[in-house]
Image (cartoon, rainbow, N blue to C red):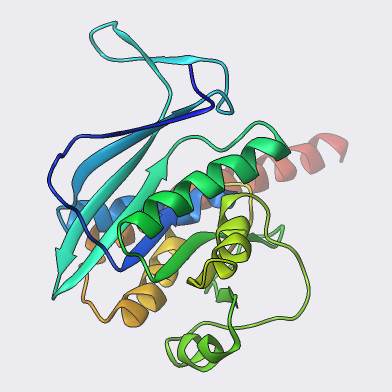
Amino acid sequence: MEDVTVTFTRDDEIEASVLIEGLPGIGHVGKLVAEHLIHELEAEKIGEISSIYFPPQVVVDERGVAHLVNNEIYRCDKNGLAILFLVGDFQSTSAEGHYILTECYLDIAQDLGVRRIYTLGGYGVGHLVENPRVLAAVNMEHLLSEVEGAGGAFEGGGMIVGASGLLLGLGFARGMEGVCLMGETSGYIVDPRSADNLLTVLSCLLGIKVDHTLLQQRAEEMERIIAKIQETEEARGREDLNYIG
C-alpha cells in the first residue's frame, strides 16, 4: 500500500474554486458544518483518500463487510460557485503524516483549480457557551476585513493543530488564500449550536443561502439533554446535602 492513495469515482474533468475542510476536531464543529452543507447542497461524492497514516483499523458496514478507513471528497455547484468538500472521520496519527496528508489534500485542490480554502473547527473554552462566537485566522492580510464583515472575530496568539492549520500554512506557499473558522465550544460535547453560528459566517463568505433547520434542531435536542443532565446533578447535590444534614 502506498503512503497515500487517492481514488476518484469520476473520469471526466472536474474543477472547483473553493475547498472546505471539515475533518474531526473539537466539538466536531467543523465536521457538523461540512456534512450539513454536503446534505443541503446535494454534493456528489467524487473521491476517497486512504493512507497508512490513518489509524490501523477497518470499518465494518451494516452488512458485516470490512473496508479500509478513508476520508472522502465531495463536490457541488451552487450559484455558479464550484465547491469541494474534504470530510471524513480521520486525521493522521503522526506529525509526519499530518504534513504528508495535507500536501496530498493541497495537490488535489491545486489540480482542480482551487483558489481559496476554508478550514472549519472548534475553539475549546472549557465551559458551555450560550452564544458561541466564530473566531478566525487567515493566511493573507487582505482577507481580514472580509472575514470580519461576515461576522468572524480575531484574537491574537494561539495555534491551530492538524489539517485545519496546515492547510493555511502550506497553502500559502502555493498562493492559495486560506481562512480558518472556529466556533467557540466547551470541548466536552458535540456542539451543533456552535456549528450553526459558524455556518452563518461561512455562508456569508461563500455568498450562498443554506437552510439551517436540521442543525438548529440538533442544537435544541442537545440543549435539552444538557439541561436534563444539569437537573440530575443538582438533584443529586440536594440529596447529598439532605443526607449530611
